[in-house]
Image (cartoon, rainbow, N blue to C red):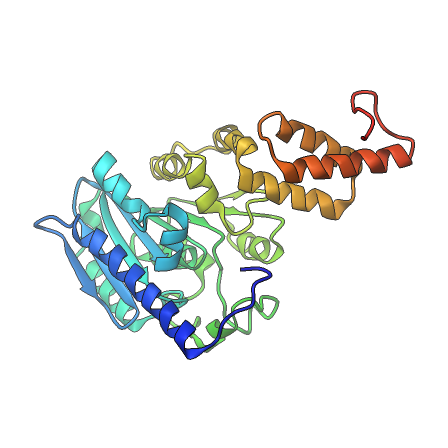
Length: 328
């Protein structure tokens, strides 16, 4: 948490690990309850599990770090379970308990087995989904199912140190090998039918990664002021399921996406991100316009305070517009 000192005592560390373990168990238990008689859950190695929930002829393959799942949905249940229950999709869900980027020989071997069994050929439609670290994995492993659809949010193209010296956000990832099998994500999506890359262009490093994904099957969808919380914001405004479903079925268009995205205009987290951006620009007229709009919908003290500051700045410059009242 910003502005809060971290407690690095052994007791605090033990408590954090206990909470983390409990959340992993909750997620896995929730998945297990949905497996049915023909599903299964396997521990692939110390940090990765896979759960298969068989339902209908459409398959959603998702990759999520447990904490990302908890942060997105709140109840710790992966997105795929809603598709299984509500839309009768089958789900193949990979879980990681830490920042592994799913660089694991056990994960590779499991996917190799699925390919050998022609597992993906049993489905009419296959969609790979993930966000952040899971987005990298979804794009990378989509190569096992040619003709599939990929929808990823804020993905990394690679964290190979020789190719991404400009991205220093994940120092521990430098210990991982991104040059072996299933390595460079933009190459791995070449055989997909379509790939949708959602990212915030104001998050500069995410933007650079996103631009590395290119090709006739790639659609990049900038989500300004979402930062690295695209999935969470789409979930909050009740769009995440719609976006994934439309992408999977070939119905997601750029114009339709941005039409639906108008819902963000009343979302508090998104509005705060815009507020922070305007504050850095030091544009009092734009700030006043924006805050007046927000205050029509929300009784938000922070926006009221910034409106007063913008009024004062404009009054001092003799540029206070007629529609804006004099500051108190």
